[in-house]
Image 1 (cartoon, rainbow, N blue to C red):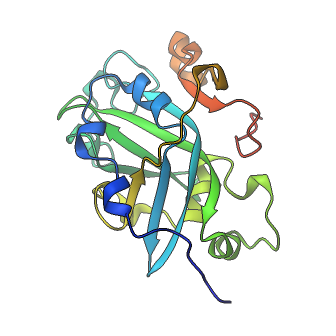
Image 2 (image 1 turned 90 degrees about the vertical axis):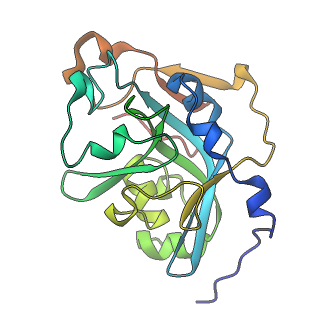
Length: 212
């Protein structure tokens, strides 16, 4: 199958800089990531799309965060790095979840990317998902999004200003009125913190994941 790319050659000009990720408010960053674009280049194949759903996790005082109570394990160690690196972990033995580490070193804040609207490398995404046609669940949900984008644990700790996985700002303005907020998904164990409205998504966008 022929793979074509319409991605322009100004990637470096559009790429989000380190300073975007190292700011202190992870909830604000999670909202601002809506409308940004995420790309991977795996084995020379470019895939990507517009972020339409995120979740914020705070290293301090957030029982839903893997780093709650300063928990440090082999898996969570990357969370304590300076913002601008990827935190990828496996759930249910099959799904890799892609998180963006934010804030300064030792703060352990992160944003989970839950869904994107596919834009680049759709043919490759279909192959990776074993789909014959485009449908919303191609990239709607953090696990299937990672499959479509070729994301796995090899990207654990990847530099988000590098050339394997990165984010771009294409000037897509998202009005606050078009952003919905609600509780995060799958964190019932977090007590009252499970009710925090730290999941954000674009209203009416068909690529947003469906809560089961």
